[in-house]
Length: 421
Image 1 (cartoon, rainbow, N blue to C red):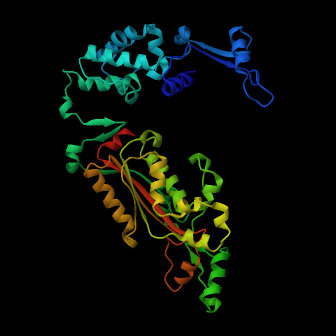
Image 2 (tube, one colour; image 1 turned 180 degrees about the vertical axis):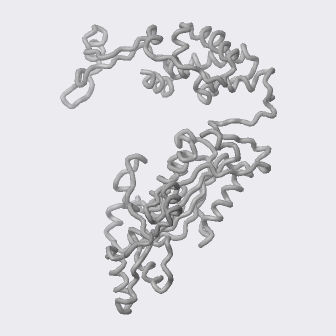
Image 3 (cartoon, helix red, strand yellow; image 1 turned 90 degrees about the vertical axis):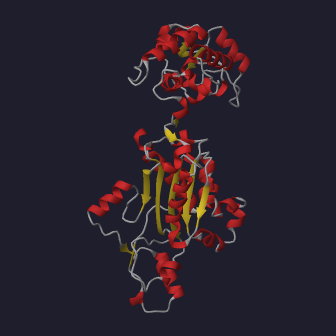
């Protein structure tokens, strides 16, 4: 029930007085499945619904389990907040207030948010905008914020480093701070789909180079472009698995659009998500923040594969425009996660990843962003590239369309941000 109250309050800013959960298919509806609203309303008024569970405003205190406030909270400020602000404004019982974890659990409406903000200004003698209640959604974080604003706080506001969603930002001192790597994700040959498996391969000195005997596309391209004897046919390579695998529904992308997308776009979406989680953050909580994304990219082989089949233009249509554009490798991710920092694709050949890291660090130190994600990848999709390199010593980073590739990403932040995970 608390989740329902939170969503209703956050989305519509209205106070919820009653929630009724009924048995499946018991709500009056038409033959096509549309709810008969009048009949449903009458059934509710006349207590004719098959109720499984019901929440009522006055009984909210008995619906949830209590919780303990962290010891780091100033107990005096917390008590003042609850008794002199929330209880006074909302006229609710102390029992209900004790079991609530956040303002969303109280089912507030927009007027009550304004009243609470005004009361906070009066009691704590500070400036407090109602929107701050959406920034500090629970009592703990709000109490901690109020502690930094009161006159007896050991750290005056003017010298206080702002903590925004657990990320340290201090634009005035950015040029003096150290930069820490607080998250990493990767995909390398040998089944190294995460940092731990990659590290295990190194510790075990695992040979990640495998035979190309089952790579028919490489052999076919070799026979097409080379006239050498079979003895010169390349035998080994470092190959990645599941390059064509992508969780499109998770990113709310249709199957048709997903197929039209350069695999580099798909994988950067997935690995950006994983590198943020590896750093100890919830990716969704970084939306609307100054997070930079810098991706080193060298080529766009997927466009060549598409050009070989003219019928694909009719199949995918306008999706191919965004699906094959190199800038979208970074920009699609920044848009999907709602990052407000720089979003760049960098191509300086072999130094692309290094330059991406350089741009990420510069962006943090200049104050352009609070966190920065830097990475690099290269997908050799057409086997011809592999064939042309057959006289070279095999690199452990090679793959076929299916695929010759490498991918690594790191999450940067000011030193100290790693303490939040």
